[in-house]
Image (cartoon, rainbow, N blue to C red):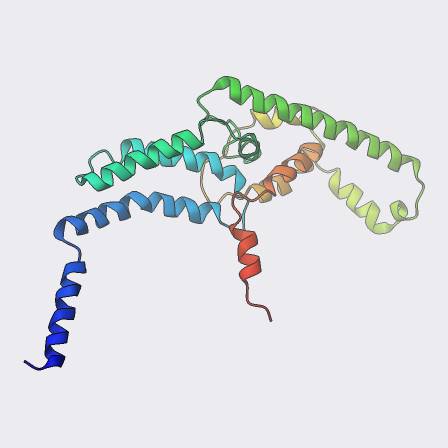
Length: 235
């Protein structure tokens, strides 16, 4: 056997040593299944065409639930250890409520009940904080309206201004915007519902609450959109 063939045989033996065993292939397959929900959650929270912050807590709760219920029959010890470590880490990291994310969920009509929170006290705390913010927005809005009403500008007399004024008064604002939104039926938790579209459609009913909603819904759940912007090829 010449040197070339000998080298090929040696390289082949090295490759065989690196090739996964039957057990390792089983670990790989179980790890793919285990990580699949995390990949889906990452894609969902990294979206750029819809508000993402409202998905944060529902996604985390779904991941914890799936780890606790869907992966209890793993056969390999490696996959079992990984599942336990992931569940422990999720529980530890999200043991203390992230108020910003919860407020974002409140303004998503699919999750506004915040029923994924185990603590009713924490839920009430978030709602009360938002009520206080709403009252501040409402007070500022009334102050702005008072200032505008005192001005006699040509802009308010134009034909277009008159048209939009009539258009916007077709749907009268609700007296208690916050409580009405809180009581209205929650939308099904389907991805095709767009909170931006819902608020755009209903902003004449909730003129003040709409502004508060935009404050939170505009916050991205991850840094992926901004990172993607800087990675875009420059033309």
